[in-house]
Length: 224
Image (cartoon, rainbow, N blue to C red; front, side, top):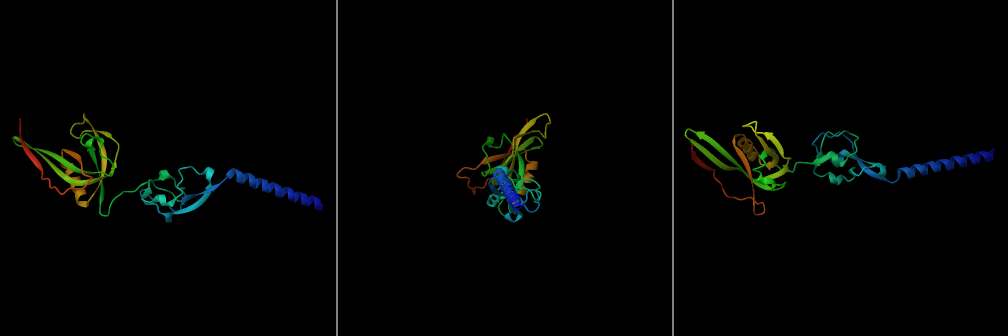
């Protein structure tokens, strides 16, 4: 009986060792991933304090998993994230690149007057506005620089919309986002409402701001 008990124990031990070995072979090497300790609202920065490291089998961890907390610098949640979620690349987007005191403001720019696709994120542009006003027998046209050296922080997709003046006409516009001072953002918002057209002008000379004052250019055109 003793011999049978010993043989049974050895058999059980060998079976357990074999099972553990097979499970280990199936799971394979483990890796660290980041899991949210709390829920994160959309467009809120995700910090290392919001995360905990969890070890999971590498074969079950997709390549989109975020494993380095340092890569979260400057990123915000793309949508509401629930506590317990494993952090993946698609869950994060770059946060607004604003300097202290700057405002982020977006307007629709006519594709025709937006420097024909030559404006890219990070560039600086001057923003001009043109106006036309009928006064009796004469029509006055004016052009003015309303914002100097505006920094472009985002460019949207080309969109076709109906003209505000004529619904039968379709205009191609591009949403552009600028980083402006409080005064310039207020001025741009006002002028966009009254201007007939907004136009961008790329700045040469290494994208540096100039100190040249440009007074409005106006002309009276006789009515035909």
